[in-house]
Image (cartoon, rainbow, N blue to C red; front, top):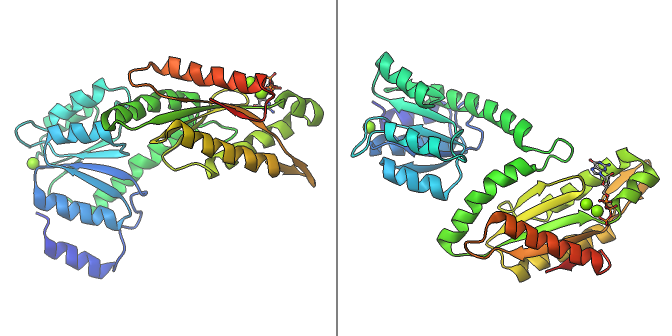
Length: 313
Ligand code: GH3
Ligand code: MG
Ligand code: MG
Ligand code: MG
């Protein structure tokens, strides 16, 4: 069994520090009915710079999974009233949670339990009593692989921002959260003005530099909770949670002013400036995502019609 004594000993060994590899600043959901184990493990994981939420049973784990985003779940099997096995079904049914990495941490050491867990979708299985450093190394190993996979599947290769596939998956979660907490969420549809002429005048590689530059400026001027994605060639979308339309307009006006006044890219002493047109729409409760996107797209078209270099609502 893990105990406070063990924790003190290891802290002396490695004062203030975590394990050798760390756990990649991950957001971890720890599901276990053993309070002593939870507080021990939470403390160790926090020393490794991870954020940890604790759930003492399957029902609270489900609630937390609906409301927050996690990088990995650590799951106990023997809990009441529902065993940890019950959580697998829940995860499998939700497309946004289906691939969430999961490590079973259990006192059960039968091969049949292990096999069952892997068949249900577990990525790893650690038996109790366990060594913290081994668990941390396993977390690190899984997250390294998933981060690489996500990089390939969900990031735009040119600009490094999220792609449309990721946006489509993530926006559902954002809207659920929005509905639950009854807060506003706004969407911006951005399209670079006369981008074709940049390509035609300076060549495609310069066009690419401009796209990278704009993505960088956008990311720098947004909150960490804002969701930025490259949608198509020279089109970007941003979902701004917790932001009413007027406030979103201010954010976009600021960014437009930045790109208008300062070149987004430089090459061989030459500087390249752009402007863009953007359309905004605040989500109406119950509105389908497509309709919301269309409203913002339509507003963007109005901005083009109105003379470009502007934000329309
Ligand atoms: P408007 O102000 O009406 O939006 O004019 P525009 O020229 O920006 O619009 P249009 O849709 O006609 O042109 C978009 C251009 O974006 C055409 C295409 O060559 C360019 N483009 C799309 N993807 C890429 C890319 O990955 N790299 C580069 N360099 N150019 C791209
Ligand atoms: Mg238990
Ligand atoms: Mg376009
Ligand atoms: Mg354009």
